[in-house]
Amino acid sequence: MQKQIVGYSVKNQPIEVYYNQNPNAKFSILFLGGVHGNESEGFIFLERFLKEIDQKNIKIPSEISLWICPRINPDGCSVLRRTNAHNVDLNRNLPTKDWTSDFTEPKYYPGPYPSSEPETIATLVLIHNIKPKFIISFHSYENPMINYNGNCLELAEEMAKYNHLEPKGDIGYPTPGSLGTYAGFENNIPTITLEILRGQAPDEVWKQHLDAILKSLEFYL
Image 1: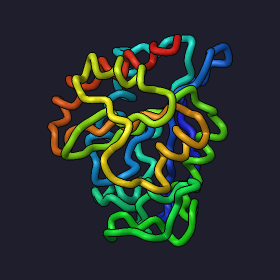
Image 2: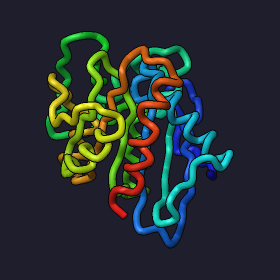
Image 3: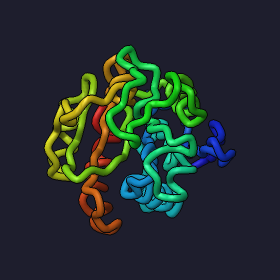
């Protein structure tokens, strides 16, 4: 995997993306982790996934270009904080039609305006440049699920065969300014938000979700 810096965080940490860009690939796929820095289950999984690729224990199908950004919010991830260093919830900061400055709790602060944060800009640059066939964003939640936005119910159902989580089109509460809305609904990019069980041990996360993720890579081939 090659490495590219797609931007810098509020505290000037590099936002790194790893990729196996193949000029003959049929399409690209984007995996995002660490949107919420306190949801370490996701970025730990992706960092292990990258290590296993480098050690040749995982082979990426030659027909795809896979792009992995384990920590889109490096400032939050480094201190296990949900928000970025401006205390902005990056999953409420995307420039969606339903973006609002209103918020019910400090952890949902959407920022002063849409795309106000450098980490959000990096996300938009990735999506614009890669034009992915689909996106999987790795989160964690007390109620684990495969949250799908856009035309990807069948993908969610295929993943569910392996990780045994329920596919849901609604996470259960409003998420204005979210990636699922921006990419999945407004830009027609199928988007899975994989909500891993919060607090699950890394080895258990790996065991439960690896096959589902590997199957996702093959789904549209």
